[in-house]
Amino acid sequence: MTRKGWTVEKETHDPYLHKEKYSDPSVCESCNVVFTKGMYKWKKVIPENASKIICPACQRIKDNFEGGYLILAGNFLSEHKEEILNLVKHTEQIEKDKKPLERIMEINDKGNRVEIRTTYEHLPRIIGTAIQKAYKGDLDFNYPDGDKFIRAYWIREN
Image 1 (cartoon, rainbow, N blue to C red):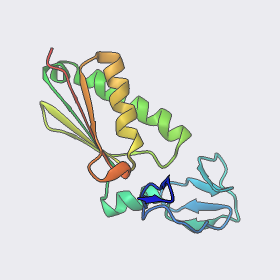
Image 2: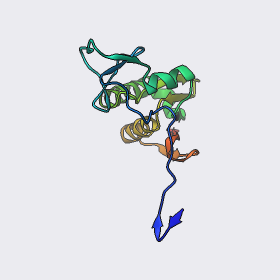
Image 3: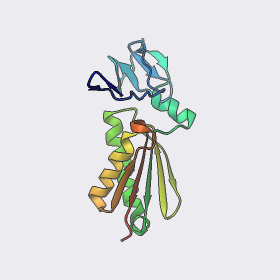
Image 4: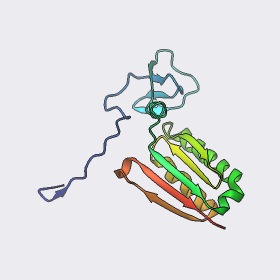
């Protein structure tokens, strides 16, 4: 949309991220992530005065509503599946430590193909890029619903 020479991008809305802030501090009843100072953080000690909430990632998992999807395929995957899945889990852990809402919801091993569902759109891109950097192959991204959902595909035959 253009207004007086300015280009205004359409704002995408994530229904799982609340516009109003939670009480500070708040803690997720499911995963114990703490919402404090406008951010989600992992804390070793949960504040005693924390309000109880369900964080956006846990709500997505409960609703079975992924924000991203990564498909891994090819002969190379079949031959190196264990090490590739170790990289997937390691990459998720690194990201989840920094950004607690970025999580793998499900890894579905279908033999010659692995399907990974994630809570948000960043993680499939990050995991796919890590796999491509480590093992080469072809990596493609598709954002069918704008920038708040991703389908990523990685394939390597040999």
